[in-house]
Image (cartoon, rainbow, N blue to C red; front, side, top):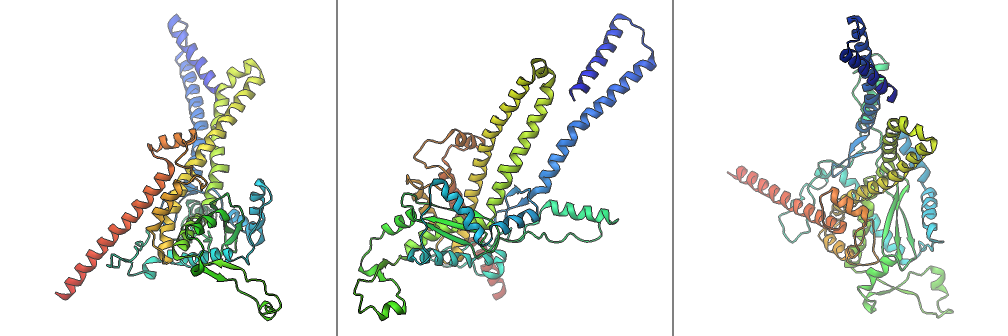
Length: 461
C-alpha cells in the first residue's frame, strides 16, 4: 500500500510539473498516466476494503442474541469447537480444570460431599436447576404469572427470547454455501442450529476457605461440564446471622452400623445447624447468579472476546499501522519497527483488560436479571435479591466480578464508566438494573391484569 501511494504521488507530481513548466505531454500520455493512477487507486481501495469486509463479515456471522435478555453478542466458536470444549470438561474434566484454577492460590481444601453443608448447597442448587426447562417455554409453564394477589411473590412475564438452541448468522451462511455448491441457492430451508443448551446437572465443589465469602462458576456443556465453586466463607457468613441454638440443632444422620454399636461407644453425636428459610434464600440468590452465567454461556462469550476477537482486531490494526509507518521506520533500522510492534502489544494488553471489564459488567448485570427469574420459578421471592446485593456491596471481603464500592474505582473501571456515561460504581449499576427489571415485571403484571379484566367484562356483557 505505501508503494502504491508513493507511485501515485510521483505520477501526479510529474504531471503537475509538466503543466507548470510547459513540458510537452501528448494527450495519449496524459490519459495513460491518469488511467494508471486510477487503476492503482482502485487497487489501493481494494486492499483497504477486503480485510475490512472480511472483518465485518466475521462479526456479522458471529452475532447472536443472548437468551432471555436478547442482548447482541459475538461468539466466534463453531458448534464443533463448543462440543470439543464440552467433551473436555465433561465428568471429571471439570473438577480437574477447576482444581488447577484453585491450585494457583495453594493446595485447596475440599469439603467432602458427606458434609451437611454440601448437602444443603447441593439441594438448593438442584432446586434451582429444576426451573431451567421452564425458561424454554414460560407461557405454557406459568399461564397465571400475573396473579392479582399483591402479597404473592412476583412472577416474571414470559421472556421474549426463550432459552433455546442458539442459531447464529454463521449457520445460515454455511447452509447457503452448501446449497450454492450443490447448484441450488435456496434448495432447502435453514435448519435449527445444533448448538446445545448447557443444562443440568451441574457440577458442585465446596472449598474450605473461611476468608473468602464468594463463589464462581466455570465451564460449559452438559454432563457436568459446567459447575459452581462455593467458598465456605460465604456459608459461614450466612449461618452466622442466625446463631446456633437448640431449635436449630439436629443430629447428623447415622448409619445402621453406628446405631448398632452406639451403646458401646457413648461419644456424643455430631450436631449441625438447620439453615432457616432466610438463610437458604441467601444461598439460593448467590447460586442463581452463578447458575445464570452457566445457562447464558457467558464463559464461551468471555473466551471468544478476550482470546480471539479483541486480540485479532488489535493485531490487524497494529499491522496496518506498521505498514504505513514502514517507509519511515526502515530508514532507522529494524529496531524502530520492532519497538513499534512492542508498543502495539503493550497497548493491546491494556485494551484487552478494558474489554474484559466491559464484558464482565455486562454479564454481571445480565446474570442478576436472569437469576431473579430463576428464583421466582423456584419459589423464592426475587425481591430479596435486591437487599442481598445491596448488603454484599457494603462488605469488604466479598467480590464476585465487580469491585467493592468502598474502594476507589480502578483506571480501567473509570474508563468503562466514562464510555457508558456512568458515574456510579459497578455494584450500584447492578442493583439499579435489578430494581428496574422487577419494576418491569410489575408493570407487565398490571397491564396483563387490566387486559384480563377487560376480557372478562366483555364476556359477561
